[in-house]
Image (cartoon, rainbow, N blue to C red):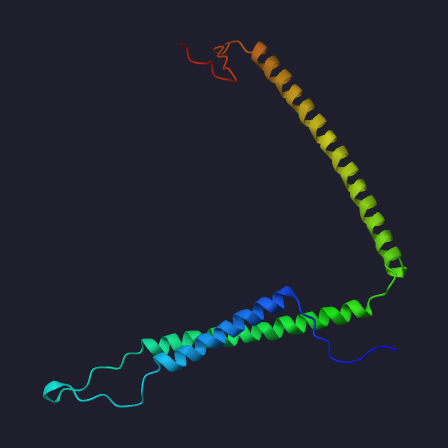
Length: 170
């Protein structure tokens, strides 16, 4: 017989979310009791001037704590729903991992590995061809430049530049 009913899936994330939400609830209660301004109108200022403006900092703190309260309990609901969905998915999975799905996955993995190997071979061949072509062009350009220089009447100054700098003398 299959057992139907409500089972609570408790994960570490759910426990942490409940602890944070409980702390936010406590902070909201403390904020309500301690820092909410009274509804009394302030006394008039000296010499008939208007009263000073009310302090709005407690209202800002109340808004912040209320937002934390709402977000923390929303996180509890989301994590709870996530855990229940994961539980249902685990129950619906096939008990044998090597079934038809496993065979399909193994076939796809083999096909991907073969495609990758073929692409690597093609890339290696292309790089070899490009390197050989570059070498041949470089050699031909050097030969042609040397022949041009040898056949001209006025010889350019022979300036040989070192590829690397000589180390400084000590």
